[in-house]
Amino acid sequence: FIERSGIINLGILGIMISGAAWGFMGAYFYRNIIYGIVTAAAMGAALGVIFAFLVVTLGVQQHIAGISVTFFSMNLSYFFHRVLIGSPLVEPTVPPTPPLQVPILGNLPIIGSIFKQSLYTYIGVYALAPIAIIILFKTRWGLIIRALGENPKTVDAAKIRVHLSRYLSVILGSTLMAIGGAYYSLIDLRSFNLNVGGEWSWIALALVILGNWNPLWVWLACIFFGMLNAVQAWLVATVIQIPYQFFQSIPYVVTIAASAILGKRVRPPKALLQPYRRE
Image 1 (tube, rainbow, N blue to C red):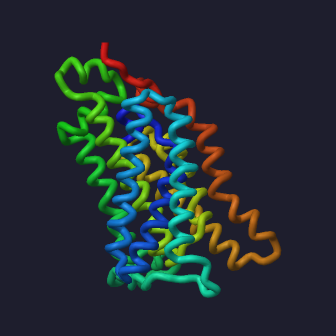
Image 2 (cartoon, one colour):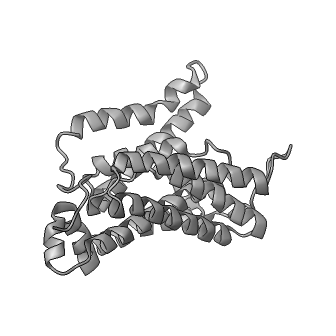
């Protein structure tokens, strides 16, 4: 949503780590995953407002604003995590989320684990992409978002508030980034540290480009990357003659190669990275 509206948010690293930190703190103190997700979403929305104010209202270069938001949000989250939780000898955790097994499919060899995931995993993998497709291509707001990324002057001429629409896109996208970070700390690790999931943020940006800014293709790119990550984890566990770092690099090497091969074939929104000033 953010990039289709003409803005690239390089603050994704800080926003995801903030979502992981605040989501963990919310779930830790209330002993409930839902509270953690809501807390992460609120923090993501707040950071989205800050970023949107910098790039939409003030016209700060998007790269500079994104990096600034990253450092600000990471240090703020780390500070409050240290103040509220401290540095206990035993790493604090949140309650586990029980997996939901799909009948029959969950018993299949090799791929059976795909169908033994938490409810939040199913929602993230199978529900968000169709919802994004419907919003982006079947609703008036989706049409506005796509038009903002191509020609914001046309949107302005139609008496639609360009700045407000971009604000909403940035806030929505930042909220989802924070929820993604919270998923990593609440579901995958059940704990938090400052380096949690940082590499995934840059991979997410690359996959958006590889998916040509289309929710369906981005979803397929994410599935493919997830499969590569599962394969490398299996290789690390079974092949002991080769250093595990070699296998861990496979998903990233493939992503770089795919970016090099397909990068020239994708077409970004025409107004991407271009601030809009009403004449």
